[in-house]
Amino acid sequence: EAQVTQNPRYLITVTGKKLTVTCSQNMNHEYMSWYRQDPGLGLRQIYYSMNVEVTDKGDVPEGYKVSRKEKRNFPLILESPSPNQTSLYFCASSPTGGNIRDTQYFGPGTRLTVL
Amino acid sequence: AQSVTQPDIHITVSEGASLELRCNYSYGATPYLFWYVQSPGQGLQLLLKYFSGDTLVQGIKGFEAEFKRSQSSFNLRKPSVHWSDAAEYFCALSGGYQKVTFGTGTKLQVIP
Image (cartoon, rainbow over all chains, first blue to last red; front, side, top):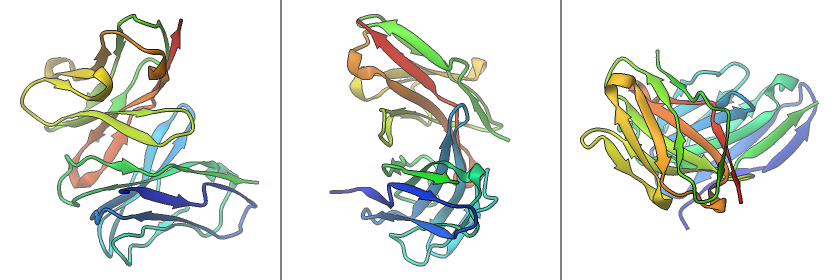
């Protein structure tokens, strides 16, 4: 089944403890992206990747890191999480990196709480 | 800069009534516009998208949207709402370099 998977789905952590949220897609998509969703703010793009080893900042990249060493994986890293990063995170992928008309396929989301 | 505005945070309609969700955008070139739906506890699912050509776009689940360049709008419509349509709806714009901007969402409540 074609899908985008995220792990973990739920995570409670403490301020300053490094964490990684994994994202994997099995559709051979070139483009992958991370969003955070907050009440009243909708989805905001954190980082995106047009292809392996190609990443770029979205609207809210501060406090996050990403890497794209393999086509299928796009982990989101919080080196020193803070309470304002408590949010619902979505990973998405789409077939090509150069065609902005592509449909994005979303993962199920990761709910992160930072105490 | 690109932006998307969904002026209605919450809308309540009766089952069987018609629905229109508003979306206004700001972008300096040809916009690529999308509508997504998010059911409670779920990810986002694409309803429809507009790139060019016919300004009336048909999507899944009986939804359609009309692109009006003069009004910078891309409103979502459905002739007859079903209880299963209760969800949150997001309008999105895709601009250069694959940057995607979402609106803040409209929550739809359907009453019997």
